[in-house]
Amino acid sequence: MATFAVRDGNTTDIDPELLTVNLLGPEPDPEDLVITPQNVKMTDSDQIADISDDNSDDNESIDRILEAQKPSPKILTDDEKEISAVEDMLRSKKSARIKKQKEEKLPENSHEASSKRKIDPIVVVSAVVAAALIFVFAAYFMGLFDGSNSLKMTLSEFSGSYSKTAAYKSATYYTISPASLWFTKQYPLEKWVEFISYIPAQTKIYFLGSPNDNILCEEIIRRSGHQGCVDLSGKLSFLESASLMKDARMNFTNDSAPMHLASAMNAPVTVIYCSTVPRFGFGPLSDDSKIVEIAGELYCRPCGIHGYRSCPEKHFRCATQIDVDQLISRL
Image 1 (cartoon, rainbow, N blue to C red):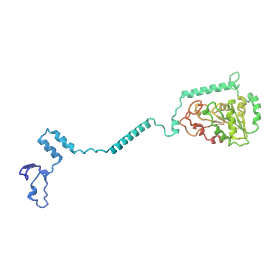
Image 2 (tube, rainbow, N blue to C red; image 1 turned 180 degrees about the horizontal axis):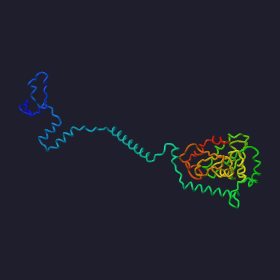
Image 3 (cartoon, rainbow, N blue to C red; image 1 turned 90 degrees about the horizontal axis):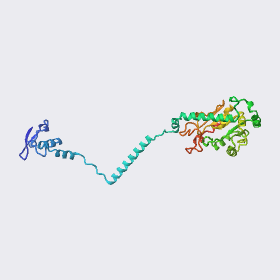
């Protein structure tokens, strides 16, 4: 350390490293070499060191100096406080929404959703067993089993039915079985009307079904205005219906009993699947058969094995979005 005199006659110790001399400049004035409290600048560390030398235990003084160097917190106005509160609320809501979306995230389109739906194997097995029982019961009721329990499929067994339906077979014809026990398995009335408008007026169209289907068949015929339509619902037996389907140019049905009847006769058939799907195992067995259904996948389809009285999702897109062109291509 170097000792220097100051103007008030006192002396002070100054670290030589804190002093710089301009050796290349003009000779300094002797007055400038006198160190005064005004031209000695002390750093923050010097202040702390000086205080520590005076009183090493005075930690409170050090804390006050450090605290004084911290920037003062910004004081917000009432408007700024309100804006900040609103921003915090929006950020909180956004975070909650993102969290909820992650927890309940659904696939972006219905095709992906439906493709990820898995069918319980037990449901499929139960459906196949139920279909087999229905078929056996229908075959027995129609007299298709002989004493040895073998299925008789020879045309001679249907000679009576063939003779009764022969009058309907004098020209090319189609059959339509528009009804189903379950609403969601039934192609909509207005779609049948649209389809029939593409069938030539001179072509015969026979409507098949039970007596309960008469109202639906008559309404389709009335709305279509097609002159070749004939309502045979409730007027033919099972065997007579089977005989008529056997020689039809094409039979159009829902996923219902008439499809199985056409399969038993190996008659050409086009089957419309609405809420159900062919992979349940209830598909057509005829050599000339085609399945018609909605293009692509639908998140809610299939909604059940047998169908419902109404669409559970209230839109029934599995039926209304089936393109009629698929049926027209089978004319």
